[in-house]
Image (tube, rainbow, N blue to C red; front, top):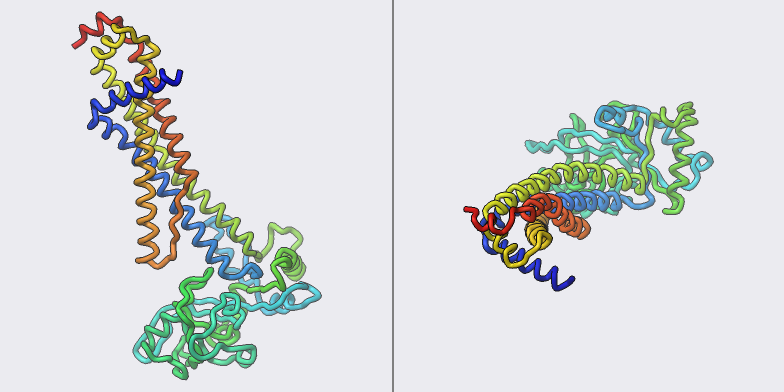
Length: 415
C-alpha cells in the first residue's frame, strides 16, 4: 500500500511539474488565504499581549471602580459619563468596616485640556490624582518630587510633567520652579517624569498630573470622579475586596438588582477576560473574511483541474491502455489537487509569517507600540490541514471525472 501511494505521489508530482506556470497560478488563492489567516492570528495575538502587558503594568493588586454601568456595546458607551462616584463613595470605600483589605485608594479626574508655557501650548491629558497613581505604575520623578497628601488637602497648584510635555514646553531645561497655565490658572512645576510610554489607560509621557482636589475645584468645577483607583493589601485579597466594593456601593446607592448598577468594578483578571473576549471576537470575524479567499481558491483549483482533465484526455487514455485502473486515475488527480493546496499552504504560512514579523517591526520601531512578534503555530498547523482539505474536497469532482473517462481507444483518439 505504501509503495502504491509513493508511486501515486510521484505521478502526481510529475503531472504538476509538466505545467509549472498553471500550477503556480492555481495555488495563488490558497497562498493569499493562508497568509491572511496567519497574519490576522499573529496581529490578534500581538494586540492581546500588548493590552494585557499594559494591564499587568498597573499591578495585580489594583482595582478600578468606574462610574456608570459597564458598557456592553457602542450604544451604551455614554454610561461611563455618569457622575455616580463622588466624595461620599470615596469615604465609604476608605472605611475598613465597610471594605476591609484596602491598602490605599485614589480618586482620578481626567480631562483633555490645553497646557501653556509662554508661547508654547500643547493639548494633553490632565490627570488629577494622588501619588498612589505613580506608585502603582512604579514611576517616580526623574527630577524634582511628587506631591503628597498635604498638597491634596491644601488644594495646591502644583504639577508634575510627563516626559514629552516637559520636552516640548521646556526643551532641555529641568522646568522645576517654572509655571504653566491650565485653563487660566498657574501651576508650579515640582517634578518631571522619566520616559515611560503607555501604562494601562495612561499615556504617561503625554500627560501632566496635579492634585485631584485642585483640578476639581479650581479648573473643572465638578464634584465627581472618572475613576477610583483602589490598591488591595495583597493579591489574594483582590477578589474579596472587589466584592465588598460592589456590596458597599449598592447599599450606598440603594440598589437591589445588580443589573441596575450605576458603577462597575474591574480587576486585572476581569479586564484580561474582557480583552480576550473582544480580541477573540474580532479575530474570528476577520478569519471568516479570510476564509472566503480559501473557498475562492478551492473553486479556482476545481476549475483548473477540470480544464486539466480535458486537456490530458490522451494521457488518461494512454495510462488506461497500459493497465491503469479508474482508481489509479482517481488517486493521481486527487493527489495533484491535494499537493497543489498543501504547497500553497506552506508558501502561505511563510508569506504570512514574513508579513507578521514586518508588521510587528513597523509597529514597534515606527509607531512605538512595543508590539511583540508572535507566530501562531496552531494557526499554521490548522492552515496546512485546511488547505489540504480544500484540495481534497474541490479536487474530488475533477478526479472522479478523470477516472470516468471513456475507454482507452476513444480517449487516445481525442484531440
